[in-house]
Amino acid sequence: MSKEFVDVLVIGAGPSGCVSSSYLKKNNVNVKVVEKTKFPRLVVGESLIPRVMDHFDEAGLFPALDKMGFEKKLGARFLRGDEVCIFDFSNKFGEGWDWTWQVPRADFDNTLAQEVINKGIDLEFETEVIDIKFDGTDSITTVKNKDGETKEIHAKFVIDSSGYGRVLPRLLDLEKPSKLSPHSAIFSHVNDINREPGEEGTLISFDIIETEVWLWVIPFSNGNTSIGIVGPTDYIDQLSENGDPAEALRKAISLSDYYVKRFGDVEFLFEPRHLKDYSCSVKSLFGDGFALTGNASEFLDPVFSSGMAFATESGMLAAKLALRQLNGETIDWQKEYTDYILYGVDVFTTYVKEWYTGNLQELFFHQPENPDVKKKICAVLAGYVWNKDNPFVKKHDTVIKNLANLIKLEKQEQQNQQ
Ligand code: FAD
Image (cartoon, rainbow, N blue to C red):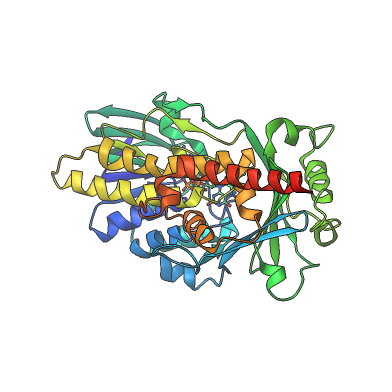
């Protein structure tokens, strides 16, 4: 079997792997990326949040992405019947980017991967990791290409950015069930022929069908729009009698008073994908000679579009720590990697849970709006979940519940007075 020798092997050329490998290459590390599929390939996760821009910028990937003319995302709109709540990222607490993109991931990820190649990084497509053996921090990874040929890649460090492939969690028995209750989604793209002109047509929106069930509408600059339904697994399963995802998504669209006219009769551009029980977790984010990043580690829920932000945050941090380790420093991976990443995961976990209890929805739709509360929540939705100056970050485990209870009491008093 042929052998290759690198300093760092990155598994997967999604956003997480591209950020890691670009940062390492910029710092003169001998890095190689292996990617199982041939790009462009379809993947879910089309609504970004501003925090990702910091990472694409630092990794030197921003200019290539910016040239592509992806639809700019300046905020997000939440709908519940006649109620509307709009977050504007330029009106948030603290520092940070006030815009990002909403993107067809096939094109977006392909742009990233091509830019990684342009930077001189050795990226091998259609090359799948099938085995790995560690000896201390050194490892030998076996990969197989599309012709079935295998080879060994010897590395001093491995960054597993294999997303839903979850290569090391599977091979090293690191899988752990998520703390979140089982939710599923069905999504597809449509040619958005009924799109209204102006902002209405391009605004990213989340339409609440029931407290735990919501529809996403993510318009792209290429004229197509992504539509997805999310809810408890039992609910999503019963949307179609015979488990047909197209019928289920069609039914879901019919439940949206706001969008049924625009999307009720348009064709799906591909057979809708059913993503069942998507939340996942791991026993550890690192081990001797490796770190897990992005969806190869933890995935919560799509409701606040945090997936890509964690993918790039963890990809960037793992790369920085790996570089320091290669330069001879001793790294406390628990403190510098796991504790840091899990702090942000914990903040978003609270927001996801409080979304599905309905408490966060109470805050979003409360009238009159409280501009100070809105700004602070907006900073969280923009992905700035490590800014402890923001009480909606620091006290995330109590502040939403307490405010929602106050709103409920106020409503109760108003009802009693009537
Ligand atoms: P990926 O983008 O999955 O890339 C991993 C790569 O690794 C893939 O290209 C894969 O082919 C490759 N790979 C896998 N196995 C192997 C192997 N054995 N060898 C070599 N390569 C391999 N996130 C958002 O930010 N916004 C959203 O709106 C959003 N919506 C979502 C909706 C749903 C229903 C779900 C389930 C998730 C959503 N996400 C969203 C999450 C988002 O999909 C992920 O967080 C994001 O794609 C993670 O990026 P990544 O680089 O970690 O992994």
